[in-house]
Length: 559
View (cartoon, one colour):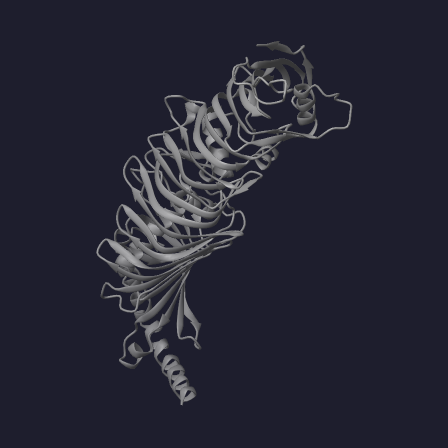
């Protein structure tokens, strides 16, 4: 039955089309349909021929759109060929109408945008939405289209190209559902939804692969803290005049994924991103690198977030809540983490509400203030840290054990992109507390134990120096770390002041120990009426933190 219908259609087309072509009816209907779509004058400078009897299609070459008020902001355009698929029902009624147009290699010149600054792919997407609103055709496909876009007066035109743009509308006479697709190598965008007035809503799917400028621009616009070269997303899109929102969104950044909701607001001067995303792994290394780049060139900052992919600075404010099972910062991995990223007029702050780190938990605030260019402030508190894991991660030349509490307030200079800050250039203070005690192990622990107890350093002995409690207050100034040490060991109080010069970690300073003993009677019992004895010793430190040298002064005795 289907074969019979197809045969009848071919016969009707073969019989009818010569009459339409000979009477110039086809050319006029062709031009009329395209003029209704563009809203302006259309001419065919080439031939109109039958492209295929099998698909009931006609092809016109040399198509020019002299003006296109119906496709604003399109000014004019041209296409090598336009293929139209004939509506079979119209043939049966003795007319010639078309159900689909395929425009090959079109070139469109767009009006200059007075506000400017829009990403190229956003400009193409806005144009596609204009086609949705104003197209009189139920199905149109642009193959290898090129758009020429310019921002403001006197700026050169930019060339935006795609491999395919497809638009389908079930009922072109009514506002309603539609499907839109944009494709180029490495960039695949698909949307299915409906338009209602100035808003569009529906299902969005986007997949990018490799080094693709459209992908980089979109990623920088939606998630400026990410720099992945390939990503994909899908979710519920709502697009109004100045707001784009993604709900029930899922992102994939290579081996990392995130789910949540984002809203992108656009104004004349600034853009703003709000939302919440939950990651499996959050990599903040690109954010750190970008922040250091801004800090090293404060004169070039525009008071917004740097978007590397566009090679320009755009004023983007942020109000984002991020969480992740794992946090990656360079070679450091921790987590889970919950944080808030806020950017307002160049003031960037990252508030860490929760971070599982080295066996403990931390809260912190990282801030970049344009009033203090070239520096980043870090404040925070971490409790129940594994001191050994912390020392190993920081590559400290000491082996220390025990649960620790860390409090810090530092100003870290922001150097060139990709360079790590030198510890000696930072400034500020910190405090490291061991309320439950711990131990100093290895060479440093053995040397300190021998010096305090008076044992021979070369003799066999324990490799650790235990302490019941300790507190180290430090201050970073002028390329050195000044330490104020207080602790308890076997009933002795240990106090000292040390300096570690950077970057060679040369150590200098003194440590003193003090012990009081109750008076003892001749029978060995504690004497209540006697005088207590106090013993004290002083240690002079030199060498390096990895291999300290301790010189013991003679002990003193007082009653």
